[in-house]
Length: 262
Image (cartoon, rainbow, N blue to C red; front, top):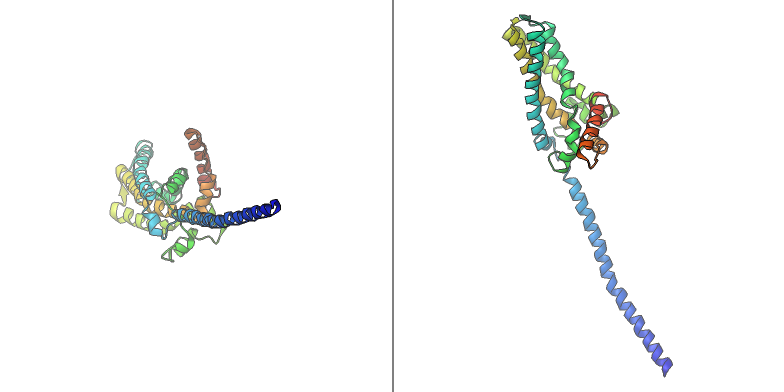
């Protein structure tokens, strides 16, 4: 009788175990579903960092803010600099084809992009995280003729990974329009001779007009997926704000002025 009861008890326990295991199956399935949902959410969050077109990058808060800052900076800084150079250290009148005008017009094609982007990468990680800036894939660049006009948006050559090369190329591309137009205005609109203040304001206004396209399309180059990933990876995330900024300044200058990959 005791043996019979033990068998019944064992059978009951086996049945209970079976029921328990059956109950666990849906829970495991729920865990799989929850894990899958979590994966999808992470993918969706990752997609939030990507722009679907160039226009979305251009109209982002970070780009608009940088355009305003750099435009104002291109007025105040050069105004003081040119006054010291052409108002104090030398005196007018100046000729329209002199080095004081042509040198600034041509030299700014390289100097302006390098100065504008010297410290630009410092704030890119936070701008990206807060949704003020976006990543951009090559396949999402529309219209496609932009890839021909601005070849540094492509990912077909490693040379475009260097921000120094990208920025200088952008300046030269802008120069195709800006240089002839500036020389014509200097010769027939303001010249052939310019007073001290005419030269100063001519050069300042030229730099102010150059700043917006340089900033906008330069930042589009930074936004390209293959470039911005490197920037985010290299920017220091030290919890100490002062150390973080100082280390980022060193890295940013190295990227922009020392031809390091970014």
